[in-house]
Image (cartoon, rainbow over all chains, first blue to last red; front, top):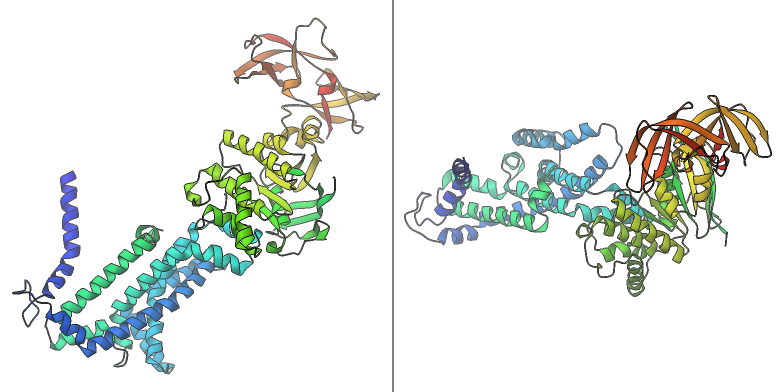
Length: 259
Length: 357
């Protein structure tokens, strides 16, 4: 039984990790096209990809969109969680479900509907509609992590702060917010990664001006199949890995994800 | 000395149709420790929270040091409060927890450090300054909570069943410590509990509450020995309560009958008549040998032991009599009675309390 267990676990991990390993290996391929296993080894595709202006511009777009998305989503999620957990508002369950809905609705549908709506309402900035969409799909993750931090905080601690002379703002600032920190950090990192990696929504809403890295990779692959895409992908994977490690260090990944 | 510190003036509060405070008034003197004692839902916690400002009374007023604080916001009342769930700030060290109130008052770092040190010394927690709350035991956490509350030098210290979650031995230690602490600081304190023993140990005065009303307020001995009514008697452990009828009263002595038994009692409070209840504490009943040498032989009753249970320091018997089943305490060193053994119960007139219905 134990051996069977071990075998299943090893197979599962292999299955999960295999695509990542394949991509990482092909990115070092010396050939002119993507191939696995590679015939020889080189680092030149990294240099090529990093120097490529389209990728540079797209990476910058993805970066600032992800950062701004995260910075807009976080305070919204804190406010939403505060009223969902502490407030006495009617229809709380319903509001919670609606807030988490973007997790369930296919993001292609979200992208399409925001495209239609922004055309109808004549939204002037392409940046704005892209950001709105990204905030929409990242908010559920933040609400989830912030809420789970908030339910862990004994509301009596907030009362204790009030009695000790803190007005409601200082109570929030010194007692509530620090208790939410792990949830906020975890949620922000999730939001960053979700936004940075997103294809389906950006596909509808990005323009030449706001072309994101995943989009530019996609269009690059249509005409070129050299290992530079694998190099960029590997860099993206490393970034996600770094974020996960940071998450574990700062907040404790398991604690933050736990309900 | 008996300067009034805190006054509650006919406080009333209802939730929906449930009146949790019903015209509650009380004066608490400076340096006094008063417990609010009662079963859950009696209004004791609501009263405490109204004083803290955590909930508002519908009508009535609260005076602290002569000033009306009924509508003063919570954070400007200068009150120390200790909660049952210690309510420490989980992300702050012991020092930062204790310093929080001082920080909110804008007190400078140097003085803050001194006063935090003093407060921790009072609860004997020096050396724990840099611990986090989750690294402390339950008793230590509650000590930090007490230090945090007294560090701001509050006008009044409120404690809401602070030892309720602790084990018995620790609770007893902390009760003694808290009493000493408040006496040394001459700090006025109000302590909420449902445990009558805790109230007896701690208090200068006990306010027994039920149904949103203070049933009796008095010294522990007063409340314990001379409960004002049936509820207080029941709550303070009058195990034996029987219906009785008043036959006559003279010179402070009341003669009653209870299911055929003649009972004499000393009535030192109000005149009673008609149908009443008589109460007897189990430790005030003695086993008589029938020789007539009892101090006050007026009250005697034969019966038969139906159960005998050993409690270490004493025996507790149930004795079936013509009036009803009596609970009687016997010392552990005396020869134990056997189940089925016929006995003669006797008690002094002064042991009988009479309650009008």
